Image: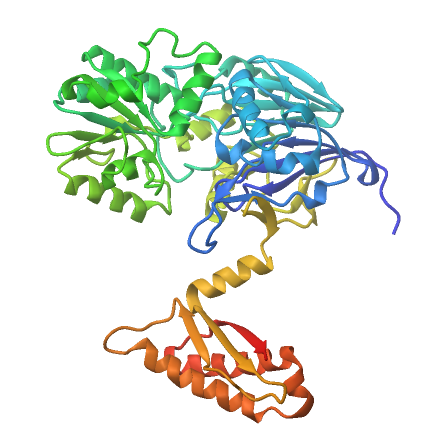
Length: 557
């Protein structure tokens, strides 16, 4: 079939569509056989109980490998937008463009991966414009729950796309500038082909709220508290940190940082001119002895992460932060879906130590979202007036609801792609024209493995079915000349149902199956291992309703 030679503008999400997190979006321009690509964001998501041993998951960029990639542009420094860059850049190998705060944090990631010297990292000033192949990219100042968030006005010969990144409309942002409404309205006046837009809060009425209001609420709350005070928030939210620090100082408290991310983000913030007029943070040595009524701890771990600062505080194992009866912990963050149990467990452990807790449920003003609610989405569509709406950053029902909202406000065309769906934006009507390979790669043991990698499959299997390890010795005639030793990992057994009795039963079955083998079968260890595995899995199914992994060790004597 002959390849088409007409220039096209296409949009291809490989992460972040039909899910929240792990954002990787690509724009292609040119004829199908000779497209040039611009990548926007390269983010991670995090492992859960379905991925034992895996903390970080990244999008699979296989389709783009070997393509002409002119540049990688980062909208902001949240992990779900930049966290995969160190892992995936060697597969993409293109110049990286970011504003100063994001660039500072990216350098750390590239340095950790040992590739900093290989990457051409180009700092773009806030509101700056760069030409990247056939794409003219203007960084548009937005507001979000991190410093220096940018939307991208991507100009191409076939029209302009406004890629919002993560955003909300905040007229009192505390850190940085307001959303650049004049520039966005100007884009709408000139004509926008498509808007690719955040869907996180599409079901939430009204507006997200302002960081300025949170600063006031936190100031009032902290001023009423006696004893030690800890505040858990996202380290990346520099505005929230700024508000907490100033509230503490207004009450005569000094601030100590707890958690690696807090130190890393504050260093980045100070590097670009933020947090310059606050008092120096207490060192660990100072924090250990500072008077209780004069200290505030800024802590990581508000989502219940097991190794973060607040979790160790709750367990009483943190080397610096000690909270107990008469102390306070403020959760100035929302519950990310999926973290409810971990957060609840963390809060129970803190409460059990006598710590009084404050959350957005009982003190609604101490947190606001960083994503646009319905009224803000309507306002953005009124400013931009795109021909095409492409919802992103959300699970399926969020994207579909966002498309419905776009139609309600008069957008002519909507497309709701899944990861791997290639959308032609121009020429002609917007439509999905292809489905390309997409998926996830897992950071496992310091290397990238596929979703179907054998080690991860076995670990998943072992986590639910357990492991049996069998060892015995055979003489030259194939007779068992030792005890049959069977050990189990992760299989049920207690005083009411002794595990040893079950293992003795399994040993007898192993002896029977080995004795049943004849001739050459007894000389082939693979045949022996397979026969033992079959009989033990069948027996385990009967005993425990499990089919464990079976490892057989045969010693020849």
